[in-house]
Image (tube, rainbow, N blue to C red; front, side):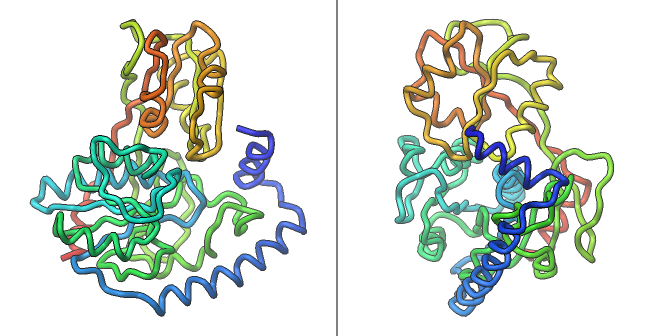
Length: 325
């Protein structure tokens, strides 16, 4: 990750106030964004099948992708046939695509491929999520829209907003802080779900806030000579707020000798791989990184993936079901 990205992340999630110039830009962002969201709302249409929106209020790092995988799995067990729709961040394609076994994450996006591989559900990736919603009716009876809180062109049966357990950073809007909308926007959510592990949680909305989190489960080797689980390794990732990944490895008692951090959705190149695998140590990445790396990773080098499992506050899934009923 570049020094610029590190500096921005530290400012967003730290306690120091951002510069006045960035605060002024945040005010301008708020005005333009509100006009944009209002225009989107005027164009709102009802999808052909019911839709659950899973969104957030901060820029990245709220756990939407693992939450969607968890939710879709429980809905399938309950007899629904969910279809997952995502924007395709990190991909080049603008038109909606039905993701398949041969889909390239550089075309449809890394999160789209991860959702497809991990959920076992049909996944449609593309910027035009209205078209994607009409496509979804051919493949299932319920839509889960990933990152949908600000995508107001589609009506939804249930609006879920995920907020990190530790809060909203410095509380400022982009670019001075991580907020995509003012905190008051939570009032239009059906449910606010705090994600991640934290001892004390300060409520951010007037209603009940639920708990859900994922935690480190195990390491899985996906390429290279078979080996015992490493105790010393190189850590590399291209996710928002990579410190969560590093903390998980620390909890597994893995000593990180090197770390290579890249911006969210970074398209790994051969030059990046040469840098990451420069030592003889095994390399550990997240599942989202793995969908891009395993196709181009050297066969003679160990690559491990941090697997996670999900934990939900009792009753959370049942309340979501009530909302969509």
